[in-house]
Length: 127
Image 1 (cartoon, rainbow, N blue to C red):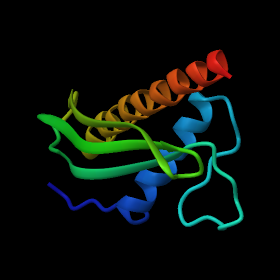
Image 2: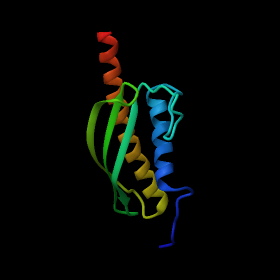
Image 3: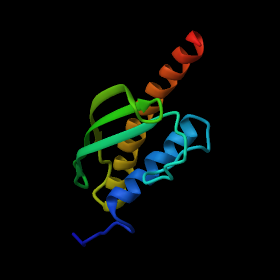
Image 4: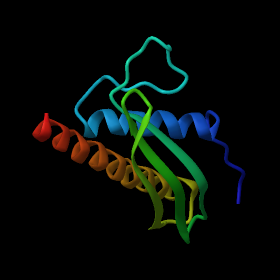
């Protein structure tokens, strides 16, 4: 098999794709990637500690990560979860692997967005 490389560092691409997904899922353009300006007020802050994000063409792909959502400008942890996600890789090429990994990242994005949405609803209901 030929060698394949990401166009940018995986961590940066992962963070950018997660931010774009969250912006779409939460219907907001107010999503920033760390580092941000200290003066910027944040309703929610998300941290993701990726344990592994692996796969092989023709086999499967896996994403394991701990993620947290913080409120109060990053001072209060609202949720902490462990994600263990797997996807089949439909083809024997790198493109099929990348598609499976994209689906994994989308699933993680939905988990985080749902947590933010639920907290936002409870805050609006209580305040």
